[in-house]
Length: 194
Image (cartoon, rainbow, N blue to C red):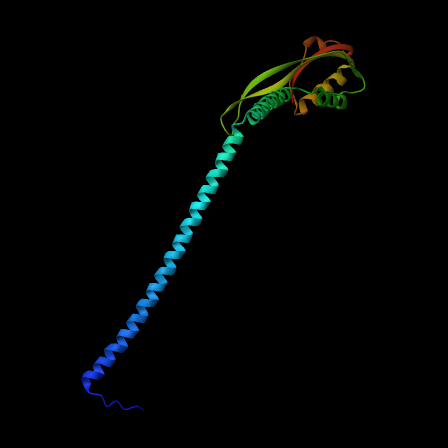
């Protein structure tokens, strides 16, 4: 243990000197901290300005590239190609392929019935969707067939098979198709939903 024999005024001066040294150390640390903080913020500012300048240069290069005549020609070619593809898609969407129709007819037609005439016409039918309430165009094929059936029963069962199939709508046989019981020349019309 150290005994301090100094008078109280000098003790107070020593105490004040100690506090002054501690305060000066704190101020030095605060000053150093502020200098480091200023250096970091200044470095961050320089980095951000550099990134902005770099981004502006990249943007200017891209803008020059996009405004070049070669790119503009390429853009026109792409737009024209997209228009052509859209036309092709619309054309394809409006097509009615007869293969599924003929396959279904072949399955449903009894062997005692054969066709002598076949014609079809594309028709556009406006329908309203129940879910959305929007009106849409439905493309159907109006089919006219004529042919020969061995018996009225064969023709009747053929008619029922067509009506049962979901793709055939509005199945109609001419009234003269039902007059004779055998060797029947018939005509038939219906619509086919693609």
